[in-house]
Amino acid sequence: MEKRIQFIKQRPLRVAFAAVCIVALIIHGTIHVLKINRRQPNSKIPPKWIPVDCHELLDRSRQLGTDIEDPNDGELLARWTTSNPPFFVSVHQFKHDRTRRVIYDSGEYHEMALTATFSAILKEAPVNSRVIDVGGNIGWFSLVSAAHGHHVDVFEPNQANRLRLCESKLLNGWGNAAGSS
Image (tube, rainbow, N blue to C red; front, side):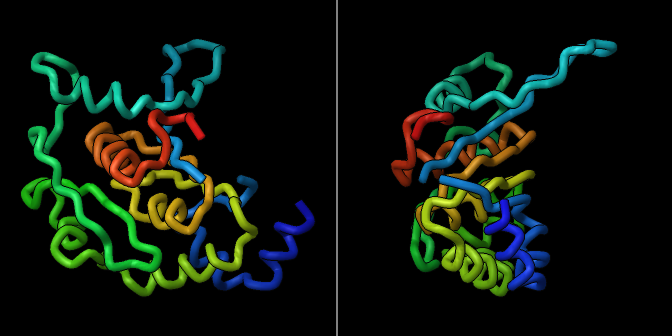
């Protein structure tokens, strides 16, 4: 804890800037995709975060009559990025998400300055740090973190985005199922 506080004191502007995407740099390389198990109304049992099995999610999304809708209709739109280090990223079809589709066309995220600053922070972080990404979207910053060798827990409530996260995770070979190391 003392080490983390010292890290924040030494680089307050960088850390505050990165806090938009990252809640904390904590401890130990794969991506865990998590979803919330919502509690029933008036229940005293708190909700639980549970790992998503990426193989199961992707298999279910390809079956007819399931509760999982894929805006890509089963089409894989993946790109090897131009970032350093590079990685595969899966994106939505252009009609579903115009902003992040730029990644597919260029291999770069549209906020290149933020990515560069974030990467610089990750390079200074202790080896195998844990990155917690809340609201991961399709997972750009989670993937950048994993590519730098950090362990990532990403929380994403949108099922379509979880599909893209899982595709990216499996394309990069970062664990077979969420929750695996």
